[in-house]
Image 1 (cartoon, rainbow, N blue to C red):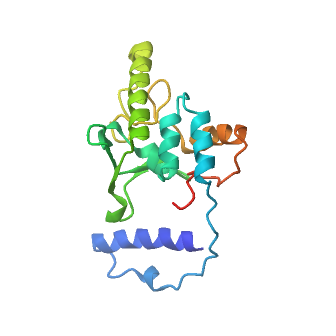
Image 2 (tube, rainbow, N blue to C red):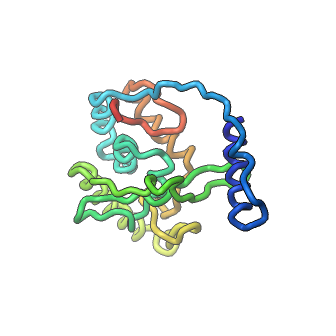
Length: 199
């Protein structure tokens, strides 16, 4: 119910901005209380075990970003233009999410606070450098078949397949679960991220 109300409120907000409505009556509706579930997390040791197991994997840098605290959509939305390996920072500007009836879309942060700059630690910066080198090799091998950029934002995403195309959210979750299961780690949610305890 709350999800439907949020969507309706967003549509009515747009109508108010366009001048077709004088106010958003959905904001006057009392929302149903939601049960709060404690978020399952891995311990630092469990996260370290996964990173050690996938150190040489193609998606290692992406999984490190998830363990760093980025949500799945945030990892998928990152472009190379959001990364400054010299300054060791990344900027969260967009997310790639699956929307029923629309497929995968790119959306901006819900609030201004959602757009933020984060520091990169040495391990993550190193993993991203390795990823740039791997993608350069893949681009060379694929030749003209390699994607020139995302169809939504025309930029080069960090998380792409071997032909440079951005991946689907559920595919990424599945790829994350496989090594976690192989390492004997507990499931921590169906939509990512795997996060460290104390996030």
